[in-house]
Image: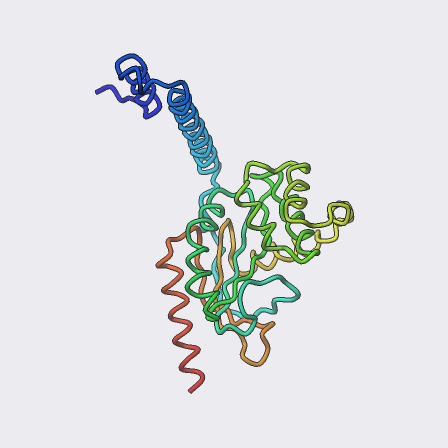
Length: 268
């Protein structure tokens, strides 16, 4: 059976509209609008195909969403967070840490499809604190470290999360000029941002994040660790659960809800 693309069907529809429809309906504006819709659909299809080609290439290269590898096992442990940007109350009973790469398509999918629900249901209600760790995989994404540095330098001016969101929303825009445009769009000081980038101010932090993740069993992105926030010291988290890859929302809810119950029991 011959399969026709949606763009082709719309093109045929335009032809029928132009040549068979009533003369009163065939205004130049209406025809132009239909042509623009076809062009937009064609552009959307091309973008989708590029994304699929990239994901296929990554999978062929072994870049599955956080694949397990020999020896990369998780052992519960307590870590100190240090000075980091976070979403949510610092004394929220549960802390979720993500190890992520801004050029990873699986990380983008998680950021756009799962994280908004977690923010609404858990972060905004005071139940969860969310922290991002930088885990650029340069062998797959040559601009990943630069992207992490750009977000951290934006964070140096108080808008880590604005740059975080912009970076995932515009994943294909990953040149130095693209990053500067994002900074300008956020209303930040571009000169201060440039100075931060040139200084390699956050190179050590990125290396430390990667080392910490590897010590926890992270072998790809995205990867997540979840645990109870220390009620006596919010800088400490007792990590007890590991979520590997861009899992669906129920996987996160189950882990968080279980920890919330534990936190409630420990209060009694």
